[in-house]
Amino acid sequence: MPDLILGDFDSLDSAPESLPIKKGTEILRFPIEKDDTDMMLAVKEGLKRGYRHFELYGGAGGQRVDHLLANIQTLAYLSKRGAKGSLYGTDYLITTITDDSIELTARFGATLSVFAHGGPAEGVTLSGVKYTLYAATLTPDFPLGVSNEARADKIFIEVKRGTLIVVLFY
Image (tube, rainbow, N blue to C red; front, side, top):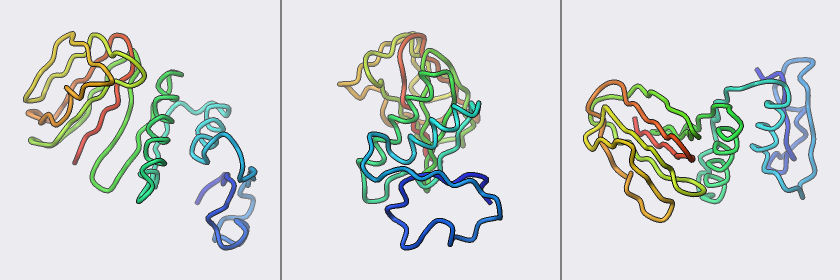
């Protein structure tokens, strides 16, 4: 049960108070016409409250690819502020790293893709995968990092300078 519900509630048929929520749940309402998506509002509120790790569910966009892209941008917003975020789809995980490294657990043969976001990603190193990289530069206009394969149960990904979008299929 949530402690906080926020958003513009434009997709609800009734008031958020009519949902099966526990007594005392905090509700923050925002206007429908605003610059932030509801997900971005939630992330900003979480950062304001001191949270540094975010697990985003239900943000894959469904038929709304624009919302998926907005949520990937939200992940980049987090990583550029030193926070961590993961977006979970039905069979994949998306995360971003900025000037950082991560180690992901994967099954042998799982598909991994990495993409530069917002400019070049320099010093990219990938290990535990079929196509390793060491100190490579990826650019946002050429998908060099698409469709790699896990060759170990741990995948290491590093970017020395820049932001990477990381997609791991289960």
